[in-house]
Image (cartoon, rainbow, N blue to C red; front, side, top):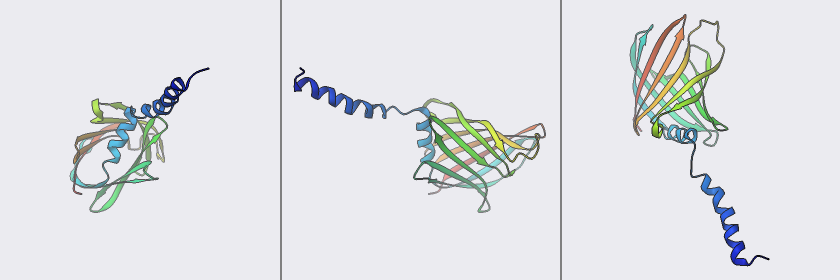
Length: 174
């Protein structure tokens, strides 16, 4: 029969070891934590290149919902939301659904992570409400965390066989 001095360390190991596994976050969870830290108001600009060329002012609002399980991103022009994205974990995957100004909803999965998640790339998975096979839609998104108060979003857009990119450059205002 084991003595108490052998049983107590085994019980402590069982209680402590599983919790210590939580300290090692996955890259998806760490990236989602960085996204949630964006909560607040942001202002900035957008610039299209490629098949489309235009520039302008774009602001953003970030907030969590679902008891912290999702981050909502509202990109606004003249104070009105024109695009909304929702970021969330789905099991081990980091996902995003983009409610586009093109009136469709591409869905993405985070597939590339730079060291320390300073850049996360979301790759196209599928789409809803695509009016035709050649209708314009976002194919990829790159989120770059340049500083706690400075990010960029690079949307890669495909429509009628032509590629465009929209760079959104945002700085936190509050």
